[in-house]
Image 1: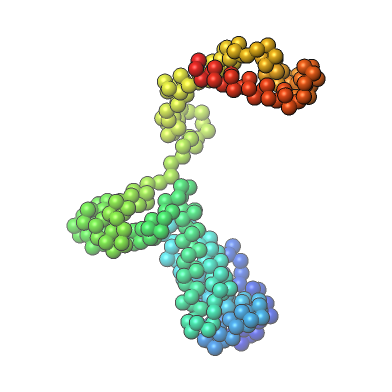
Image 2: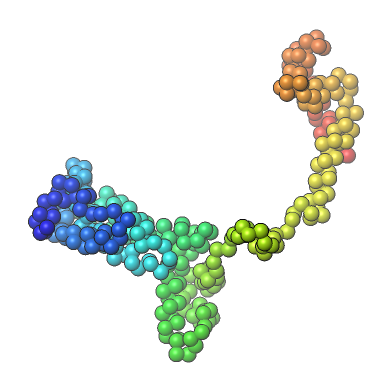
Length: 306
């Protein structure tokens, strides 16, 4: 298929030209054959999208820049994530750029889209590189994506001196901090995060053998002395403490509290209602509520001084 035929087909249905990411080699080969747009064509298509909402124009703009996404995504293969996933996220950034692109700014789409493509890939890497996020602030993100390449460059310069050294020297830390405009402590912290790995808290084997996973070394807070004292006090409050607090109430107040909060009917629907107790004592439901509130205050005060 020649370029003219390809362009004509892309106008009718641009998305049929690109295979799915399931076959990565075929996808890359296809996007590299997509015709490039001249600046005039790009401007006309961007205006058609902006002014008329022309989705076919948007499709042609996206298709002509898919090779850019493939090129940018290759720069991030060192993080151990699937190339297809990186391309997919970069394509999302490309579509966002196409949607927001203003042809009147006097710049080519490739320059504008580069930021959006990298931003989406960065976000994907930060979310999926480790189970625990290693970079959340702006400074940490800058360190995450620059520290590795800078470290490799410094290792290359020092290879003749020491081929087995993996840690950064104080001079290298200071140099990186100065170049990235961050504190040396932040460089050291990120280096530790990058050099560490995810460790499963629980054992991963099911063979029944004794495991020495980190969970086996965690302290049992329930056996800590202050926790045991607190637990014992809560048990006392729920039993003897309540019984002792009820003794400070008069007979009517004690029955109201018991019927309202301490008894359960056979149908498990709870104790007597305010109206039930009002009928027993020949007063209003509001009066029963007032007695109940006063009784609970007395009990709370008794428990605090116990």
